[in-house]
Structure formats: structure tokens, C-alpha cells
Length: 447
Ligand code: MV4
Image (tube, rainbow, N blue to C red; front, side, top):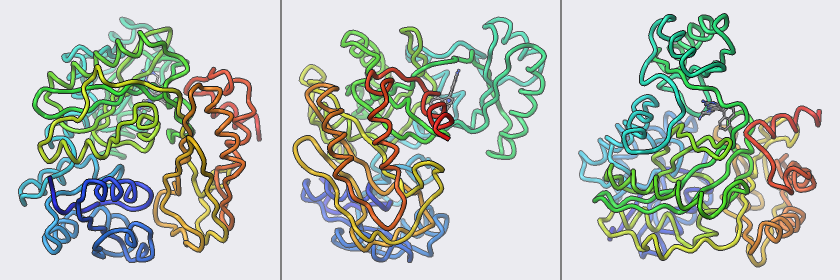
């Protein structure tokens, strides 16, 4: 096992990783920008290194500064958290070249999944069901028309360098295709420096369901069930739950085993998430994330498995601590993302937290990096915490969540907490009856 790990991140996820390190008896190194000198992750770490000015590109994205921080402190491994450098293949490569372990997959696997066409063809080769569409890049209008008429309208054009919803265009018929293709290409070129696009059948009302996997990098892999992340606004998840209200045990085990089997064939190492659109009982692969995800705690709640502990152990060469047949999915968990944003307009609300009282009690977990008196800087993501609630049934989980949301006090800044009070009263949410467009429609009706 490593004796010292550097955490190349900030906020709640830096704390999450610190805690896993401490429980493994590992010394921790925090890195921080000048804006984060008073941050909780700096206080809780054994050592800390200032790596630059507030702007992310000069600090949390500055590879050379992070490598230097490893060398100064003697850290043997780096946990990247999520966001920032977590899916940067160059970063993984540079660390390895310096004899520092990247706690994550190989740079090859990061690269494969970073290019959405390569990711999709790889997934298909591994036996994962994909959305019908072009078998690779679509270059000409006539190619696009042929494929669109083959799979049937509506179709969606996506950027291969995209992901997270950027650079997508829908076409409903031949007359809309040319313009959709050319604008998608132009936008992709401007946004990602890569004009390559591909075509898929457009699914009108799917759910977003993702499967958590762990691979040992030696042909062993398990799945930890799914998370339903359909409740999103502008491609930002707001509420996630496990299990999905839409799946039964047989469906869970079937798609889970397909994913675990694919990861075995790929020799995948570390934690990963395979994202699907789910419609009319069918799963369609869209992307794979080669990192720990924000919403991982709901999987931890229903499986009892510490995903960050597993990531670190796997990176050190240890086996996965649990066998597939020993995993029990127990009860139901929901995560609410607490952002420092206005709950109606979602305008960011940096500033000082004047009162802070997180909820507690049985089945309640709060992952957060803030404290009373903390000044939320304006430079970074507005996620200030996550409320994760576990219950024996979905109903118990919902009752507990209402109670926890009522207890939660964050004063001095606006937060998304009031949104959850409203969602918890809504009959569709109570019934688990929602798709990827539900939240945006709900918010439009609230105006
Ligand atoms: C789609 C789709 C419908 N059909 N692909 C958006 C983010 C990116 N990861 C994939 N996305 C979508 N791909 C096909 N073939 C609809 C979306 C989509 C979406 C997906 C998941 C969660 C929220 C979404 C909101 C709008 C569109």
C-alpha cells in the first residue's frame, strides 16, 4: 500500500478522498490555489502545497505544479477526484513517467472513452448494446441522409470530442439534416478543435441510467448496480437515485453483468461508469466515464462498499475486496446536490456562509467541504455539498429525505435546498415517474 497520496482536487471530493486515505493509514497531501488557503481539504490534510493563483487552469489544472508538489512531498500516488484532471490521459501519462501512480485507469482507456466514436465502437465490440446509428464518423450530407433514412428519423448528431451534452443537434427529417450536420460540425470545431461528428437514432423520452463498475486491471471486474440520473438541468445532475425506480432485479443483474463482462475483456482498471439511455425496456450505451463520479455515495449506501477505498487498493495492485456474488443491494438511496445557486434561476451565489447546520441521524450522510464562516470563492463549481439519504425502501428514503432537507440550514448564500422541498412534494417524483426532460419541464412550469 502507498504511504503517501496527493489529492489533486478541492471541495467535498478532496475531503472524501482524504477520509479514505486516513482509513487506509495513508499520509495525505492537499494541493490548493491561493483562493483555497482556508479550505477544509487543506486543514484536514497532513501536508499541503499551494500550486498557484485562483484560476483553475493555473492551479488545479496545472500538471507541472502538481507533479512538482508530488516530488516536494514524496507522494507516491495521485487521486484526481472528479472533474479537473481526472479524465486527462496526458496527466496520467506524465505521472507514470515520473514514477507516480495515477489512481485511475490506464491513459489508453481514458483516451478510448474520451473519444465518443471510439468509445461507442469499443463498447459495441465488447458486447454492450449501443444506440443505432453511424458506425463511425459521418463526413458528407449524402452519407448522413443514407444513415438517417436507414435508422429512421428523428436522429441526433453528436460531436466525437463532445460529451456532457455539448455539440448535439436533432434533425426530424431530410430537410433538417443538412443544417443540423453543418452546425454540429462547426460548433464541434469551435468548441473542441475537432469537427468529427456521428449520427444516432434520437430517443425522445429516455431515462439516464448508469452502471458502476470496478476492474482490477488484470481481467477481473464487478458491477455495483445502477444509478438513475435522469433529473438534470442543462446536463447538470440535480438528484440521483439507486436503485432506479424503473428497473427490477433481473434487469439490474442482466445489464450489470454485461458491463462487468465488458470490463473483464477490456482489462479495465479502477472505478468506471457506463452510461445508458433507457427507453421501453432497452438499454443504449452513450458514454463511459473513467473516473469516480459525484453521485458515487448512493452506490456506497446500497452496497456498503467504499468505492474510494477500492480505487486506492486497486491502484496499489491489491485485488478488489469483494466478489460479485457477495454484493447485496440493500434498500434505496437518493442524493441531492446542494449548490450555492439561486434555487429558481440557478445563478451562482458565492459569499460567506453565516450559519451552517447539516442534518444527521440514521441513514443520513452529508459530504461537504464547507463550514460556518467559510467564504465560497467565485472561481469554481458551485457544488458545496451532497445530501445522501438511505432507507430500507424508496418510501422510507423519501420520508427521511424530507426530514433531512427540513433540517438543513445554509444561510448567507442562496442554495438549491428549496428546490428539493418542492420536488419531494411532487407526485411524479413520489412515483419515480420521470425521464431526462422532466426537470426542465417542471422548472419551466414553475416560472
Ligand atoms: C441522446 C439523447 C437522445 N438520443 N442520444 C446528452 C448528454 C450526452 N451525454 C448524451 N445526451 C443525450 N444523448 C440519443 N441518441 C438525449 C440526450 C440528452 C440527455 C441525456 C442524458 C441526460 C440528460 C439529457 C438531456 C438532454 C439530452
